[in-house]
Amino acid sequence: DVKVTQSSRYLVKRTGEKVFLECVQDMDHENMFWYRQDPGLGLRLIYFSYDVKMKEKGDIPEGYSVSREKKERFSLILESASTNQTSMYLCASSLTGTHDHTFGSGTRLTVV
Amino acid sequence: DAKTTQPTSMDCAEGRAANLPCNHSTISGNEYVYWYRQIHSQGPQYIIHGLKNNETNEMASLIITEDRKSSTLILPHATLRDTAVYYCIVRERIQGAQKLVFGQGTRLTINP
Image 1 (cartoon, rainbow over the protein chains, first blue to last red):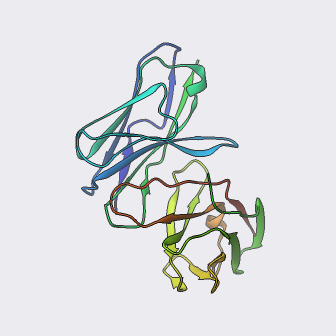
Image 2 (cartoon, rainbow over the protein chains, first blue to last red; image 1 turned 60 degrees about the vertical axis):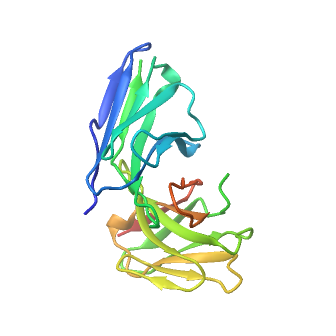
């Protein structure tokens, strides 16, 4: 089975901290995505990447950056965490030309 | 913006067929219908997709009307583990990374 692994299930950080969320997939997928999920707002795309070192902004990129130095790893970076970035963060990957995304289990981030 | 309309919630008895409707009246000719589900505290999981023909896999069946303006996801023998939020999504199949646009979905509860 395709596995998308997110490094932390729960994370608590302080306002102003730099936060790294890590995502690793083991099926050689070209495409990787970061979404956040909030009650009443559904899933919203933050950033995605279609190749190593390539990145594209999604719908809500402000306050975030990403890094894709290796094909299997896609990192989401909160440069200076704020309380409005408290959310569930979901990583996904897909193979070009196929129909489905595979999601990780999510990281619930709380910024205090 | 999501292009689909789904009921907010539904109930179904364990062992019965669960039929989840989705309206997508503005679907264009090259857009596919996808279904995902999200079990509590997990990432979304791909279920099935279709273009115009009915589709069946080990998880579910997808019935698409002839005019393609609506579809129904059928879980033939629902179990308690099928309790989840079910998302109906329409999008084009194109090469490369393509984001998913999730609406609010249908919260399906399977009752013993």
